[in-house]
Length: 464
Image (tube, rainbow, N blue to C red; front, side):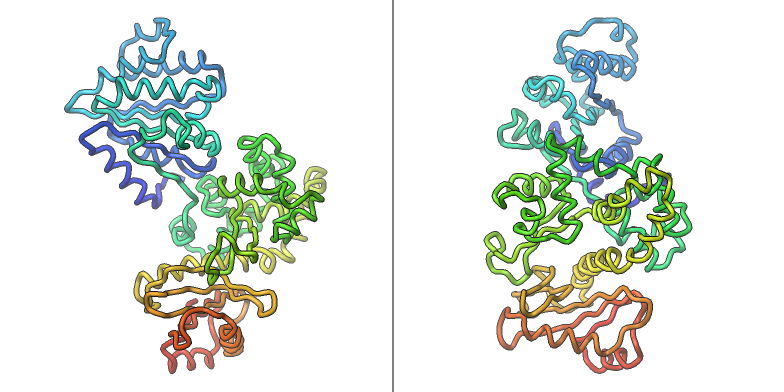
């Protein structure tokens, strides 16, 4: 994958920091394979930059490797022959190399490994920044993929480096709207199918890019025991948490449809209070999210909260791959693929399509196509009155949007709108005379009768 797509906002942040009059200290963090290194390499093109990738080796091994990088960068071979007992001396050489005319970029990737090798390293680097780099024409970028460690070492209030950063970038997966740039010639239906597995993670997209259809891509790159995606969830978790079994069980329970905290606790046969810290960690890792009906006035205290997997690939893997691991490892991949095909659309893709449509509602509002300023977009549900795929709220305009998403093989008809209107009457929010709009998304289009209704009613909008 030779193209670099999107990340416009993040690139603008880095360029703005590069143009600061004072020294800049930028923290870039996010889950593995999300494209942090690619972003930094793209930014560093045609700039004087030293890039160092820390490893899980000892501090001494890292310092010697960094010494060799400094020697190459400064074109002073004698440096690589010297023994440096202190990091300060190496960074002093770099600080001297930064001139008022030419700003120097220093990148330390996987920074958390240095703190793991020596718990005092964040304090050491604080001293280096405060006494040397912070006074020079330098831009420092600390990058890390272990979110919990990056928080403890760099971002949290207790960290010695807290308050030093001038900018931070939490890099997240790419939005669906860029998938057409990667999968040229694919239909919208196919794009949603590919997104439902790869979830916007650039490394996953790269594996799927040249495949003819999603099932072939899954067979070759996920169900194949030789593929790194085959056991990717285990790898992601074991790098971030110590009690991998407990976290694994919680994610598995959510993927199986247990979305209430009580149901998850029941599935695991543990007290519900026992799960709080696990939920908090998984939320911080962007693996799960706590969801409440969008109309809740006090979402933090809502008793209607549900948990869902936020990561498309994790949801896919735990739903379809994990139950068939024994078959896959014994060479029966076709059996697992055949079972997957029977429910892939209804049990997985259709729900991801709802996420895609919710994101698109924000775009439609921003473009003025949906004529209101939305403050919230989410789902709505009630134990007695059912659920609605999309609800958008605008207190400023005293308006509400009700939406339905259908990932079917054929066009949808007026009956879908009728059911949506009936459910909308059960949603208690806003003034009695609120303005109401109805938005229908369909991957396979709409019946002529429904199109006629939309032409006659300005508050009904259809999107294919």
